[in-house]
Image: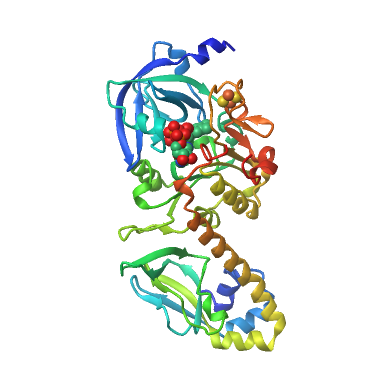
Amino acid sequence: MNIGHFMTPDVSRVAGTRRETRDTWTLRLEPPRNAAAWSYRPGQFNMLYAFGIGEVPISISGQVAGDGTLLHTVRAVGRVSAALTRLRKGESVGVRGPFGTPWPMDLAVGRDVIVAAGGLGLAPVRPVVRTLLEQRGKFGRVVLLFGARSPAEIVFRREVERWGRRRDAEVLVTVDHASPDWAGHVGVVTTLVKKAAFDPGNTVAMLCGPEVMMRFMVAALRSSAVPDDAMFLSMERNMKCAIGQCGHCQFGADFVCRDGPVLRYDRVRDRLSVREL
Amino acid sequence: MEGLDEVIREHPFFRDLDPRFVSLVVGCARNVRFDAGQYLFREGGPADQFYLLRHGHVALEMVSPTGGALTFQTLGEGDIVGLSWFVSPYRWAYDARAIELTRAVSLDAVCLRSKLDEDHDLGYEVMQRFVPVLIERLQGTRLQMLDVYGHSRAGAPGS
Ligand SMILES: Cc1cc2nc3c(=O)[nH]c(=O)nc-3n(C[C@H](O)[C@H](O)[C@H](O)COP(=O)(O)OP(=O)(O)OC[C@H]3O[C@@H](n4cnc5c(N)ncnc54)[C@H](O)[C@@H]3O)c2cc1C
Ligand code: FES
């Protein structure tokens, strides 16, 4: 690996922005001159650098087919992420990547696929859902289980509704706290598992969301007989180098930037319940 | 049209129930339907039924601090509605409202409780099916309380 290249950000121009929820924006980024870095696999992330402020890992939430612009969906939680959400069309951002392990799309071929996402966890799996639906014939049943805090915090809402109208996919959405205008499911995302139809012995499950939500989701899938080696989780840890050099993102024996973020559940099982690891 | 015993045997709550017990349960059961907006029960009322949902959806609601109805859970086909029928003083703790046309099997709680008292094997069987539902709902409530989507592990103190 040419570390020098991966350590220096390319400069990318913001081609457009879109507000997803109160605190979450999607940035559409133009390919920098080094266009090789612009192909990615679902599940991978880039390090986005808000100039003069700092750099954070952000998953790639899609790519626009026509012009190749790359989408990143950012929630403002602190200094850097807030600065990224303030970027507007024409402004610049530093980009390093793509980094990390992808979702196991090859393994999913011919099997039922459950994508289980919570909150902003839908962003890193959106490319998965898009691929599953675009290449629908390659997969068994396609199930999306998605939980959000409230209807107002559902990211990509229109797209989720479009997915929900398809007859060749089962899209179940629930919120923890309903508003009066919400006519859908209310309750935690794990309650959706029993409502979905899939063959547990021939299923690949991809989980993305807060760690505690993934732990509960694993338990629900396990009680529906999905084996441990068929579940994949996207882990989050703070990062600096993103190339397996600094140890900042260490998670037991793994560096999340290099060995993850997508890890098979049986590999992380014993570490998941350990606090502050 | 399926008979009540078949409906009960096939409902996830009673699946694989011993046929002897099925006939005891059927003795307390009847088919019911609720139109959209109709209440299955209201908070404070006597918990003298419980429901095995067959079709449709039901919202469980409580009065929010601002006075409006707040849905804290929706239930659908294969779920049971009503937990308080099992525990004294047998009063509903929330409202249950049909969101759409809903069909269910209603079990008369007084009838069922007396059968559980008489036949402890049936009592234990029902208990074994009932407690996991209670635990699942309790876990769900805990998760809701944690408000998990507001926080993430990355950047947490000590990480
Ligand atoms: C592989 C990977 C992929 C990621 N993908 C995305 C993505 O697609 N979109 C996205 O918005 N974020 C994503 N994140 C999380 C993102 O990197 C962090 O939110 C970011 O690093 C926070 O930096 P900051 O300077 O804005 O906040 P900091 O100053 O580091 O933190 C400010 C406050 O926010 C809290 N905090 C930190 N991170 C989060 C978080 N993720 N959620 C809620 N609170 C947080 C901290 O505990 C602290 O209290 C990803 C992280 C990883 C490791
Ligand atoms: S961020 Fe440096 S090793 Fe992962």
